[in-house]
Structure formats: C-alpha cells, structure tokens
Image 1 (cartoon, rainbow, N blue to C red):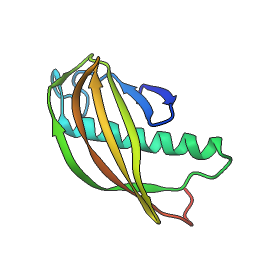
Image 2: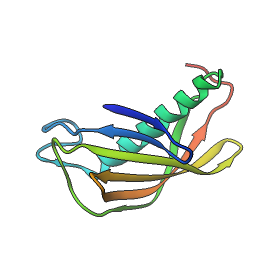
Image 3: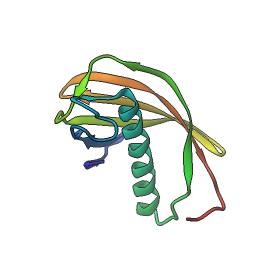
Length: 123
C-alpha cells in the first residue's frame, strides 16, 4: 500500500505503484494475484482506520473468498492504480466487499472479497 486517500460517503480509496521485479511484478506486468493482494490490503487498512476513528479496537480478520473477479487490462510496473472498496453486505462474522481497481479513469479489475472477522482475538 503506497497511498490511503480516505473515505467518501460510499467507499474507501487506496493507491499502489507496482515495482518492477518485486514479488507480484516479476517483470513489467503486475500479476492479477498482486491486484487481489492490493485489494485485500486496502480492505484491512480501511477497516482499521474506520475502527480506530470510532474509538474501537482493530479486529483481526482474513479474506475467506475471492469471487466474481474480472481483469480487463494489464497493469505495468510504475503504473499508479487506485482501488475503491465498498462494503455491500455485512453479517455477523463476515462482510462482502466490492472492489474496483482503476488505472487513471480506466477500470482494470473488479470483484468481491468475503472478509471473515475473528472477534475475541488480539494480535
């Protein structure tokens, strides 16, 4: 995660610039797995910021599933991507998060993450 842009009424926004020859960018192309990992880190960051701003304690969690993910265009090393995350369903113990990743104004990936929270545990 390189950037946290905050939240508007609907979503939280983060940014990332892939680095050539890094784990998810073994050449010039940022792998799809890297885009999903960036989305997962975006969810964790936004949840942590929201919780701390409300005076609560951060609750550990993990991505339980990745669903309906589509990739529309490649992302290259040095490209600045912006990811918007929006909680679309909240249930006891898990949430469904809509994720959209953009390169400039072009949608390059979108999907859903199911995030499981583990109440009662601290790190």
